[in-house]
Length: 108
Image 1 (cartoon, rainbow, N blue to C red):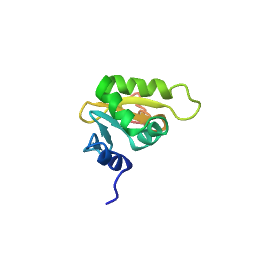
Image 2: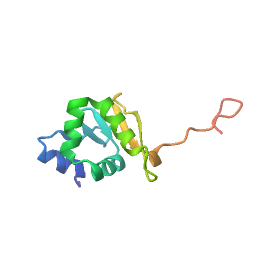
Image 3: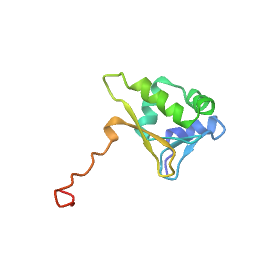
Image 4: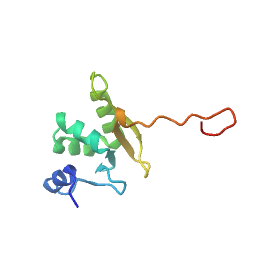
């Protein structure tokens, strides 16, 4: 099985970045989708991301990443909750639209 890029980064950072059970990057409780991680490492070195999460905590780090990428005309990042309740950051194009509900309470 092929390694994810963050697993290689985690090896150099004493395991501070690992794969969460749902397959996403886990930086000390901050979950990032693969697309969000690849976007984040364009501007932040993996060690910088680890330090930010260790210093600020997962939720504040998620907010900082959202703010950093919120002004770009390209892809932005949004926050959700992971399966474990941890803050999860995904790219805006990964957001699934809510299913439409008909007048009878059934999915349209």
